[in-house]
Amino acid sequence: MIRSMTGYGAAEQADDLVRVAVEIRTLNNRFLKVNQHLPEGLGAAEVAIERILRDSLSRGTVNLNLAVEPRGAAVRAPINTDILTAYWQDLEAAAKKVGGTVSLEALLALPGVVGSERVLLTGIADLPARVEAVVAEAVRRLNRMRDVEGQATAKDMRSALDEMQRRIAAIQTRVPAVVQEYRERLRQRVAELLAGVEVAADDQTLAREVAFAAERSDINEELARLASHLSQFRELLDDSGPAGAGRQAGRKLEFLTQEMYREVNTIGSKASDAEISRLVVDIKVGVDRLREQSQNVE
Image (cartoon, rainbow, N blue to C red; front, side, top):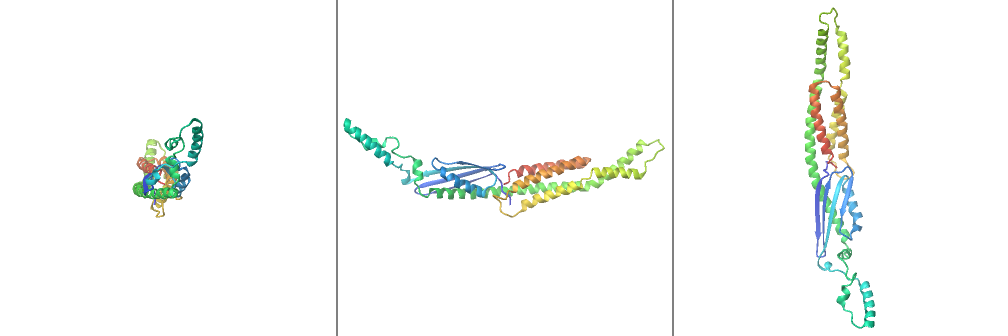
């Protein structure tokens, strides 16, 4: 089963302390490129998230957005008691010299006394585990979507393969007629050139020339290889094994389309026949269609 590289997956988990939400979008790429957008203070989770993504994905550009929202008691910003104590001691000493008192409100307004939400997030003990669980669920949903897209792509690819195989069969049927037509054209041309001249071209000479031409334009080997490439391509599409990281069917499909194009070009250059040339153009269109779709397969 093949899997598309484009898709979307989202998941979230929320309770009285925190809400964790993840969105993942993937696009085409020859390799795996991960872009993570995490809240400030959660850089430590980047390695674990990268591991989860690489365990499930092998190709594509991955854009991950993580949102973490504290709730309830967790919304309260923490107080840095060490900084508060230092301020208190300094201000108390100053108050003794100049007279006056130090209020708690004034202390809390000083820089660094009241912590930020970033500091607060690190205080949620199981936050890393929550983040990893939500990311893993988002990846599962992403891959479900990519699998569905992959099935639709495989269906379209099979249709293109069927069309190409019909045209290959038409070329194979046409090849014997091309040789026969060349023989008749050569015989007629020689007869025209020797008209009124007391010289005759024997059948053996004509047969030898026809044999040389047939050998130069023989495309049976290319047709056999092309049919083999189509068969291997179809086997990859019909493979019931699991899609995902490590399989990389897309790279194999892309390689086969390159080989197909090489064989089709050779057929077109060797077969000097208008009907075969027309069929070759149609086959090239099919190869281009397969190559474009293969570039979106993981």
